[in-house]
Image (cartoon, rainbow, N blue to C red; front, side, top):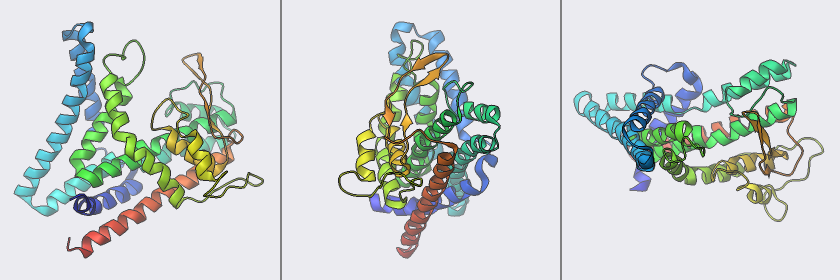
Length: 335
């Protein structure tokens, strides 16, 4: 059954990722994510206005149940109706349309590239402004190294959230399960904060996102070592794949050096493959927050950011090849 699901959804995943790489954010007509955001905001306002704060923990459970149920169940029902009324072709077209919208490999690459280009041109203020669009830390006083570190952390932390996890759920359960994941991820980005305002209301959304991303994050980690070569700078430490001191062993040591149970995995993998150090402290809303380092090399430079984007592109194209193989197996099995 699992094998049939993986192969059956492989053509949609292949066309979805290919379309995302070609179109990026251009296919924004009736995009589900802004709709998820508006609905989540409306639900939050409704809960805060109608439910006493002592019951906000219960209200926090309602948020993901309603949002994930609405978009997962709604997309399943709509696809079923389209398939019955308009046929298999219309069903496939709508599935690919949504898959292109909900995958974000091209968007992630473009946003990080928007940091790199002015940084390499010496326009540090513009690079800081571009970085501020994709990270939560203060960027006004960051050096070239700090800008590069922030961009690389965003790139590899979101490789799982924007690419691997969506593909995982798309292959596992089609567009409806992909919608469930994106709804949970959107909620986590809006209310999944450990502060006074969201500690009760956002707990379930944050926990659900952690649970859903658990397996994909670890898949991302091992896939990176399967498809990416060590890309160390000249004079960097010798790095091989297996045994004591290997890239894999170095990454494994730092995989949990992040507050999130999942984000550290791809970041640690890149840090080992490139021989740099990510993580560490940063300033948020004027307050310095200390975090453990991820990796044991020097702090990254703009050249490491170039290498990071190169490896990211290699990784995504490797996923594309893997999806081609799965789609071919589906075709050979009789479609």
